[in-house]
Image (tube, rainbow, N blue to C red):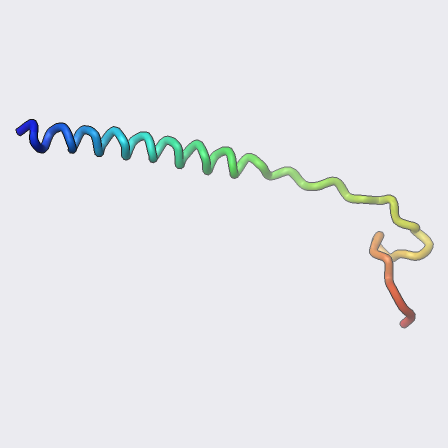
Length: 57
């Protein structure tokens, strides 16, 4: 019986550890949800919505 009990317990323990690591990793990845700051240093006279247009229309 120990022939199956030890590998089964080890597999369950490793599976639990991998599951916890996966949950914590996904949680940390999902927390990085901030928007980047918008660069408003463009020239307002030569841009539309702060996007410089090159060339003529």
